[in-house]
Amino acid sequence: MKILLTGGAGFIGSHTIIELLYAGHSVCVVDNFVNSSAEAMRRVEKITGVSIPFYQVDIRDHDALSAVLDQHPVDCCIHFAGLKAVGESVSLPLEYYENNISGTLVLVDVLRKHGCRNIIFSSSATVYGDPAVIPITEDVSKGKCTNPYGWTKWMIEQILTDLHTADPSWNVVLLRYFNPIGAHPSGLIGENPNGVPNNLMPYITQVAAGKLECLHVFGNDYDTPDGTGVRDYIHVVDLARGHVAALQAVEKNVGVEIYNIGTGKGYSVLEIVKAFENATGIEIPYVIDPRRPGDIGTCYSAPGKALAELGWKAEFDIEDMCRDSWNWQKRNPNGYVSD
Ligand code: NAD
Ligand code: UFG
Image (cartoon, rainbow, N blue to C red):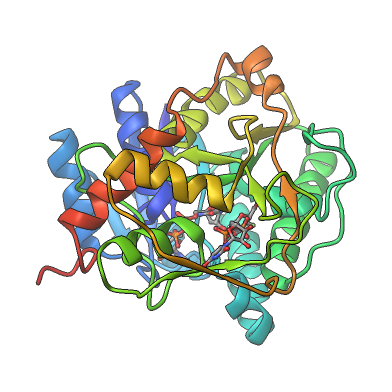
């Protein structure tokens, strides 16, 4: 298939390009580089040996996006583009709603005007809120989000579902990611957070690199085996392959379908620290801090639906994830900026 990736230069998009190309698909990328760079695209080209058409385009720019699709007709869009910093979304709600929601509205309008009615959307386990059932299956009701970022995912899921109701020729695949970590085993591409990382694994790798002094563990009084938060960490290469598998749902004309993309295993913060130390031999000093506002205790998936219907399951284990995260950090101490 010919696939448009919005936000394709970002962490998950860049890994997905590689897996799509390996599976025989062709790609076209748009990204405004607000949280990525053309260097990521050059690295993907280096890994794959393929020259990739990519355009510095904001998905809110109707004319520019139309011009790309005039030149590159596509069968399906994988929609990664969006702002994703949870804390920032609390202080900049309008910017988040505008970028993520207006961007999606413009995108689907341009797609339908170009005869493409297939979309795979990057959603998040955050739409479950504080989940009523663990492990979380796709039929668990959506919950209340604790921040504007989460609400944009919640609302975009609804908008795309309504779009299918109005025009059943649309196929909408909602992928609810759990916690992607790791990096491409080449060490050429990975997660490139701006400033001090908010997420656990990039924080740990920066402690390991000596850029940060010690890890702050947010709370040890949750109802979990060691009191620290439990999450379903998934290797970004597995997640990328989940998108290739999701194309089968599009080919089968499923209408609207939701898949959890996780491993089904939960690890606590302290278990991640241990796994990182085992995988790398580097000690991670930590202190226990109060809970982070908006956090929940436990969140992990029941990933069986994606296996049953798409034949997809995660293959990498937690040591692989830690090793590849560290390999990326070690080789690229300043991310995509060469030092
Ligand atoms: P990322 O920030 O690395 O990638 C997003 C990309 O979108 C960036 O390259 C950014 O420059 C681009 N972008 C943002 N706004 C744009 C716009 N208006 N026009 C064009 N490009 C734009 O993030 P990621 O981790 O790769 O996440 C990809 C998607 O998956 C996002 O939608 C994110 O919300 C979602 N998601 C991520 C996680 C996670 O933990 N990383 C979890 C659940 C869902
Ligand atoms: N944590 C720490 N210290 C840190 C960072 C995180 O103890 O410095 C803890 C958190 O309290 C939590 C766990 O590590 O228990 C994971 O935290 P992350 O910030 O890495 O991930 P979250 O589960 O909070 O959020 C992530 C993405 C969201 C997405 C959500 C979906 O950041 O975008 O997963 O489940 F919505």
